[in-house]
Length: 175
Image (cartoon, rainbow, N blue to C red; front, side):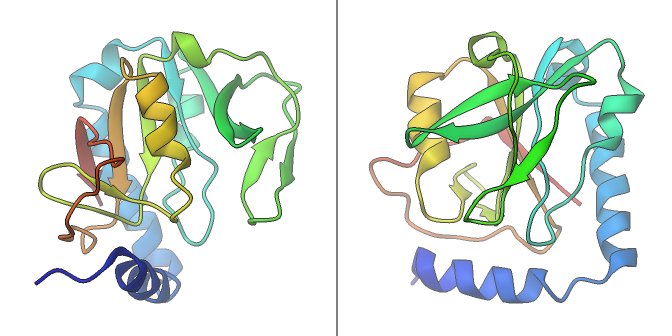
């Protein structure tokens, strides 16, 4: 019997907040190392990335490692995600949910080839456990073509029964 998503969410968040800096940085290095071998990521010009919150893995190092790629951060507008291109003028603000989003930017949502997706956990069949608002599931129904890579810690491979509105990612990388 699987745990329900709400219980899983609470358990993972509790454990994630206990992860120390050394382990978080090690997970970050492990994930970046795997991305350096990930064919879809390497071929992509337009990449969706995320600003880490609640001890998520920080992948911003990729921006300096790949100056020829065009990175974009998600922003929720009218209950929908859009990705705004990162440039030297990009500034961030914290939403009421504690997530940092770009204030302004050029919307390149439709151009994204790869999206690095924050997740609390992933099932072996690539279903993502998020924070429960369904923003990414709704987004992927509208924009199904980008290659979706979930980003989790090593211990966050989980099991739950996907619901009808859940969208499987293409793969996930664990650190």
